[in-house]
Length: 337
Image (cartoon, rainbow, N blue to C red; front, side):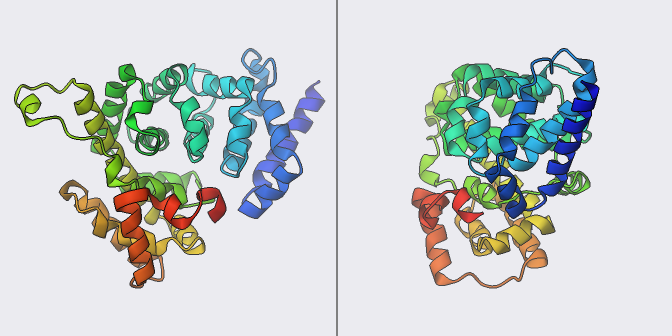
């Protein structure tokens, strides 16, 4: 039994280290490798056997490394046992190391890259557990990576599927989480943490996708009369605030990723640099000015900076003002990897 566990651990370690590039991960997935990782995650005694913690660490690491690749998000989502184990590892105080919990948090963000997962992620039972997870790691900067991935996941749900996707009883808590993170975190600190932990994405599109959410999706501000009366608890008010905090988080995330050479390389490879450059022109909100300036500066430093083409400028304006970036580019992020 112990020898089989050791063999499984070695295989998972090999798969984790092998999957450094998108192409390598695709080969493993096409050969059924992701299903083997899922089988390890579904081990029936994972939650009781302390001797399996090393195997859990390796399994969560493997899954976090491969889950960005289509169709892994839906494969994981459809496996109720695997999702329950992943949520349990993250939430319920299991004695796993902090790195494993951080990788579990990144899995939730990577799941949100596929819009078909949003209904599940926004379900009350799942939202409640993920918020419990966030509460355990509110203190910065020690757990800044967990806070970053989770707040961005919540922001993606609100921006791309609408604030109405979130049940009313969770909105104020998510708003508080987003606002607290925005106040406490700096882009440079997140960049440093991601580089330290060697966080590497395989696509930059989800970061642009959230920042390019059309302004037409923004919930209307509450009437002036309601503001004068101090009525901040109305549905229209909380949705408006939640959308604004989510958009600020999305722009912050793009500021973080353009500050990383590895993410800027992805922007280049996927022909997205021009859209990142155009974003500040079409998002003139004063409270975002500092982040937008940082995005432009980062792109100048980390990419072959040039003036966007007229075609890209037109598409960017259409995306921001009307239909979103995925529709303008003719597909979802999977088509860009």
